[in-house]
Length: 431
Ligand code: SF4
Image 1 (cartoon, protein in one colour):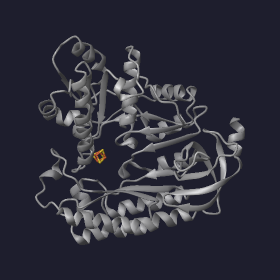
Image 2 (image 1 turned 180 degrees about the vertical axis):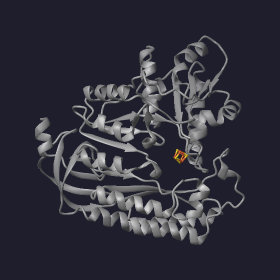
Image 3 (image 1 turned 90 degrees about the vertical axis):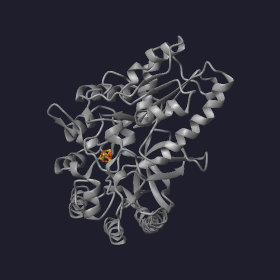
């Protein structure tokens, strides 16, 4: 989401006559787009700002700005503790950026604008994207769910969605620029609603745009996944069969305390429905361990769900207190060493499951979209399957953005290794 927001900001600044530099040392304006979802993300921003202070010391005319969720959350303390920060803008105030930069450069005082809006969706702002394969499409902003551990509803405000027309225009523009994959973004992407249109309607409309070879979306809320969405996914070959389905906890009491609005039983029933309608769909998840009050038995309930579902991958986190949220007030915080030990047990359980899920691909021929050079060798490409598995293979005559058929020879770590069989039929159709 922050990458997509940064592309909007870049688009806005491009239009105002500014140009992106390749080296930090050449920049006269430095903006950090921040995330407040976890404590660690905030710490990273603090240390990055510390390094920028040295640049500003050498050249006081440099302008430093903090944008995004952390700006919204910590505006006062940022200004107080970091006198070299010139401007602080929350996620709904980016439009004011060119004006604020001009004012500051004209000698006006430091600026803060962290007002949230009920309407701002940046519908008319076209992002400046770095060239590539995948274009992010931010379809809605904010969240009305108020999970008790999460700052998003406070830093990003209430849910609002963009019109289908503006998203179709942006998708067509991205295709014209050479992108072949769209990833739809939203804090609660499947809560999308604009007029009569709901998320499955938007997906259907985007899937019909000529040149859209793949569509992904993230992150959905399990409570908002319905049968119609699954049917739409099944009906369109260019909608990827991969769902990120945040579980957070497998224990009903903890789910209630988190305000997640589903029970363990409902979550498992949803997984069964997904696998019935989309048998090849991969599933990933988010888990929080050590949520306040989580007992050993409740942690075991999470492990049981993980064993039962067998996720392809899991993003696992120790609960971290987010000031201002309801869970921060809970008195029964779990000790750090217990959280650490639970995280370790969770990872030990998930690792072999992920490996087994990957090993099941060995011997199969899969269609891969070539996305980039492999990190390990300049003679190999890396690309993803429809089900979001990374595959590495020798380049031969394939090029970036080709859809190719790859025979999977082995699995290692989180990726698969294979060799080119032949360009896929889909690739021939485009070529
Ligand atoms: S649904 Fe997601 S973004 Fe919204 S409050 Fe819950 S965790 Fe945060």
